[in-house]
Length: 139
Image (cartoon, rainbow, N blue to C red; front, side, top):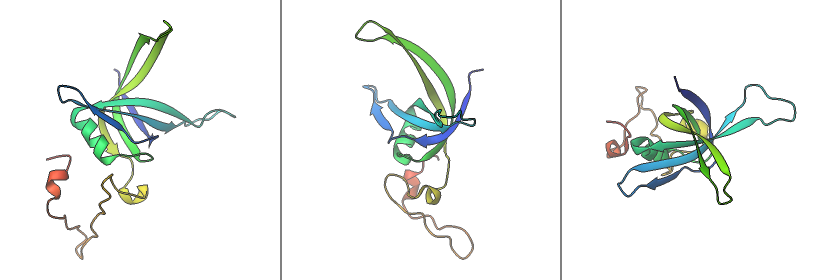
């Protein structure tokens, strides 16, 4: 079974593009800390990821550089010929599911639009602002 589970931080803002047919594609790199580190070796791996459709739109809207992300996906390898005629081998994670790796307050800032979370009321529940339903990534 080809299944990958990663937790890491985005090295830069995701790049979201659209195909001529309207399919959204998000590309980003996730810095994933290594569990075991060798002396004078790298502390993290930088893993290229790609997401499609609603998942890509969600990533583009709610994730930015430095934000912690949990994802599930699969490894995809490929190759191509560069301008010099040499074969270049590629490895990417095809993202199938993403989740926030930390709360917005732990991240130090909210999604790209900068809205703040409402404070909890006396009963411990938050009052959801009007009009937010259209911005939720789920129904």
